[in-house]
Length: 167
Length: 186
Image (cartoon, rainbow over all chains, first blue to last red; front, side):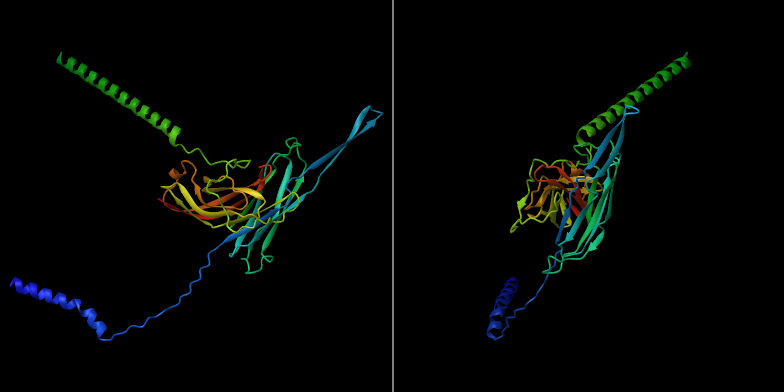
């Protein structure tokens, strides 16, 4: 009985091996097909330029002393002013996506100097292909005022820090 | 007589119990103190890294030259400066390797050196060395111990970019913050 089963199984195995050969001989043909699929990925590339003007502001103070012969003392006249009161910070977007720009200034307290920043908040459009010079930009204006107290030295002290946030 | 003896024994037992409790309490205090000391010495978070006022002497060890960067400088107003930043806002941190995979470049057209910090919830976990114009990074090391403050998952963080004068090394009064998404993997 075992012999019969083994023979049948061996026969079945042999026959199944020859199936492929038959298929070929029967003349079945398959076309070779080429397909073209185009996938374009546009990864966000962020590139921004930040430009700022001179951030050193000098306050000059002049004291004029005039001798008063009647009182034998000096009459003093103090005048002072900043060499400039404004500077600009500009952000330009060269990314292929839009960016939100926000500018802020954190003044250092106790110097007698007021530092403020106006403008500089905007959504800058994505760059346009081939138009580098037309890149969207925004400018903030930093203004300085007040009279520096004794904490402000000739060597200069920090009176504020500007943060440009790009989102 | 027996009653007196029993009372004395009970009293002695109670005293022994109190002594034992006292010893246990002292042992507990000693253990707590030791644990606190060990934590303070070896595991305490030393706080966020402070932004250096002068550019670090060390160049960033993972910095590489940006290919095909012509290095043509941006125009800068008199006394002012110009910088350019190229980056991806996605960062992956591998806790086992203690590194972050990212893309950040200081293109050759910049006029300032840069130092990048990555912070999560105002805690600085990464601070690069100096990146001169024309350099980029794709990998940065975590600050020592930072991996202990993180666990796998997503975080909202930010790049803080600090600028330094190339001649004096002084930090500029302008810095940049860029919100980023951080994926932490084990």
